[in-house]
Length: 326
Image (cartoon, rainbow, N blue to C red; front, side):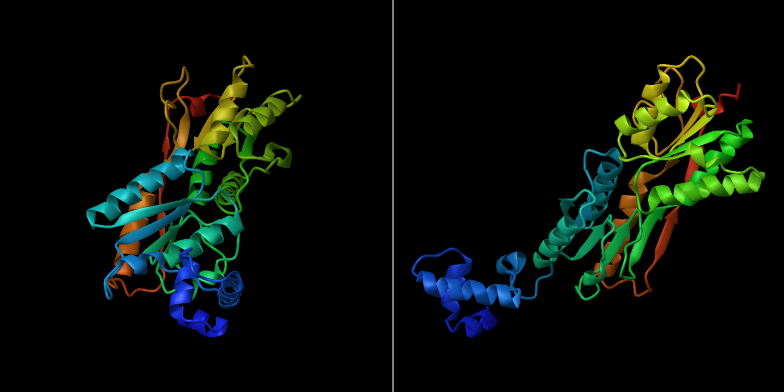
């Protein structure tokens, strides 16, 4: 505020009144203050206004995707529990693959003086965080432009696990439906390809289906097209829980159903007429591990270089993935 006052040629009280919407400032003077604010990039520190000098923040921030997705909701719930046990609150920011929106949300949270950030990053450049002065833990996928802690699932290993299982059932025409993602489903595709190489089988690229959206509707449409081919696949690997939902919807229309393995468990998967085989990870542990690591960094109790924590996957056999080829 001192810098703004100097730049605008006014007193601190005038800057305060403009920032807080107070009265008694001429329009011309207020405009001069606002220009100085824009030129200097001034941001009011909301938390510092309410805290006594020297007191540390007791809030963490979690920035992730759509909270209606059970995957993100599970991460959020687990991280809140761990933070709460240490006397910290968690401020949530939800941005859905929008780099500009994510950057704005993160900058606002930093301005509120949070003790640390947990971020499920999008595809944007995160180098702006390098000098933010706040510890950062990335969740589920790495970020571009910065070296920082990350906690994620073994996506490639999980993709290989699912494909190995289907190959082991005798399937040789295995389709994979890929939700858009610059990292997670790309690594699952790597595992799919690795499994084929290990089995000495070429990948039929026509069975590698990149969906325009990661929705159940897009997956249902793509599955229907696959099943109506002259040479349909005998098995399908669904790369996310939403994709698995769309695959199952499409299967209602066919008598001879392919084997299906999904990635990430979902509610009622074990209650369907043919329970769904899935590759599952401990999604809640993603949130817990990220929160534990961030709390240690915020307390200065963990001096190690950036950590890369990889959580394993497991195959849950329920029936859909054990159907034999025709």
